[in-house]
Image 1 (cartoon, helix red, strand yellow):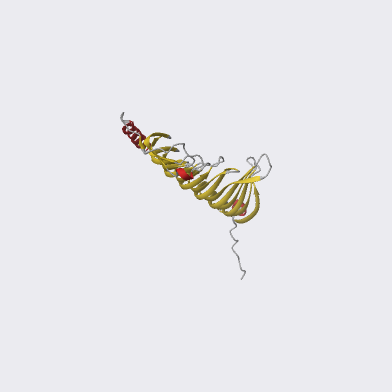
Image 2 (cartoon, helix red, strand yellow; image 1 turned 135 degrees about the horizontal axis):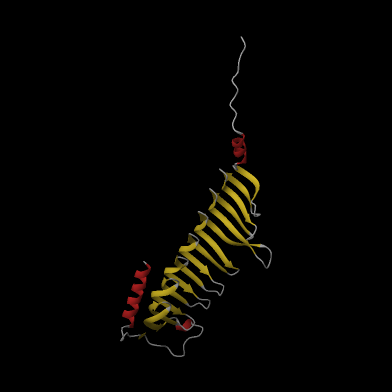
Length: 241
């Protein structure tokens, strides 16, 4: 008796080609039409795992973790320096959903950088900013600006300790004039001291002390400046909330 065999069902060629075209695992070099290219791991046709992306037009390089096509995890971003022709690191830290989130260090220039917390590409949480002029701010940030408690230490050693809002001194605080041996303690509104007390502080160690020591002087508030300042501060706070 003759034996008959059923023909095997063959899969459509387009499905076979599509499966072969899917990128999974480690790929050496994958180029885009615009010249960008990526070396690293893939999953379901998306960058996933460890990888290195180069953007041709911007001259930017990212090396680090990816998740479903986006920078996610720890990674470093470098940009091309037009003067030297070499790549310069601008950010090293954590990412989430293609944005800087978590702890990281951002370099704004050779002598200006920030180290601290990020959220959605903005400085948020605790952080320390080193400015190119030698000043240093350390404290709380919100929406990329100092917000809450913080200390600004100037290059000459003088410093402000107190509250901030929208990147400006707002609320109670103390300003140490260590170069003159004086301390001002009072209340600020938008970087302007409205009222407070000035006393001698460390006058004997000050490099440029005042000619004569001063007694404790209280700035009175006969016209209700303090009350007005407090009202303004509270109003602004309520509007922003």
